[in-house]
Image 1 (cartoon, helix red, strand yellow):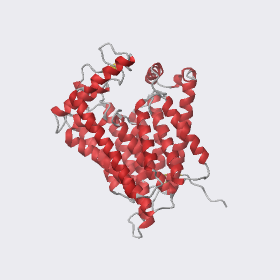
Image 2 (cartoon, one colour):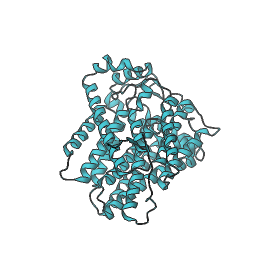
Image 3 (cartoon, rainbow, N blue to C red):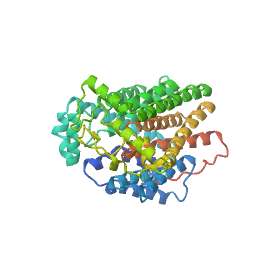
Image 4 (cartoon, rainbow, N blue to C red):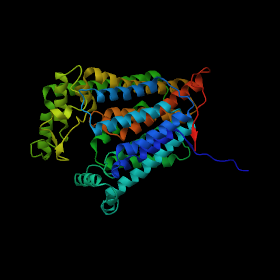
Length: 453
C-alpha cells in the first residue's frame, strides 16, 4: 500500500508564495485587509500548529522590535495616521509575525530559493517581452486590471518608467534582483561545474537585462553597488582579516558619502546642481518651475533636513512631512509628493533622533549579524552550501534594501516587507545551521514542527 503524500507548507514557503503574488491585490483593486487578511490568518494557523515550539533568538527579537517601534510611532497622538499608512504597518507587522514563527530547514530553504529563481526568470521574460512588444500590454493585460492600475500603466509607458505588472512598475525589480543574487551567490559559492550551472548563468543575465531595461535608476544603482560588493568581497575566500578590511573600506565609503551628502544639504548645493544638470541636458520643468531630473528629490531632501533641524529630538510626527510641502511637485505624475524619497531623512524629520535610532538600529544589527554569520561559515567551514547561499543572499538583499532607501521610499511600500522578511528568515536558517553544525549543546537542536496539508 502506497504511503500518503503530504505537501508540507511552512511559514517560509507561505511568505515566499505571498511575496511573489501580492501585487495582484493592487491590480484587481482588492483592499489591503482582504489581501493581507488571509496571509495573517495562515500565520495564526501556523502558531496554533506549532504546539508552543517557536525558537526566539536575537535576530527575531530585532525584527519584532522594528515592527513594534514603527507601530507605536504611527499610533502616537501627534502622528498623521491614514489608511495607506495603516496598510504599510499591517504589512510590516504581519511579515515580522512570519519571521517570528519561522524555523526553516535545508529542504524548506532550498525550495524557497528555487521558487524565487523561477519567479524571477518568469517576471524577467515578461518585462523584456512587454518592452519589445508593448501592444501585448495595451491589447490584453491592461483590460484585466483595475482603473487605477490602468492610469498608472499609461504614465509608465508615457515616460518609459518601468514595466508595469498591473499598476506597479517597481515590483519586477525585486523579483529580478532576487534572481540575480541567488544565481550569483550560488555560482560563486559552489564554483566549478555542477548541475544547472548554465541555468543559473541564464537566469543571472536575464534578470540583469530586466533590471536595466526598465529604466528605473534607483533599483539599477542599488543593484550595481550590491553586485560589485559581492565580487569585491569574494564569498569563497576564507581570509577573515582581509574580509573585514573590505567591509571597513565599504563602510568608510558609505560614511564619507553620507557626510558629503549632509554638507551639500546644509549648503543648498543639491538644488543648484540639479538645475545645472537640467540646463546641460535640456531637461524639462513643471509649470511651477521644478526641475524634473530627480523628480524633485533634492528639494524634498533639503526640506526634510531643515524640518529635522527644527525638531531634532522628537520630530514633527509620523506622516506629517506632507503637511509641510507647498511647492514641491513631481513632473512625472503631475502631483504633489508625500514622501521624502529618502527613508533616513524622512524618519529623522518625522520621528527625530530618538525614533530614528529605535527603528533603524535593529535593521543595522540584523545586517551586522549577517556579516558575523558569513564570517563564521568561512572560519569554520561547512559542507552545506545552501546555508552559505542563504546567508549571502540575505546579506545582499539587506544591502540592496538599505542602499535604495537613500533614494526611494521603499519602507512605505507594502509589497517590499515580505521580501525583506524572506531575507531575515534566510538569516535565521543560516544561524540555525551554524549552531547545529559546530555546537554539540546548541540551543537550536530542537524538533521543528510544521503544519501538513
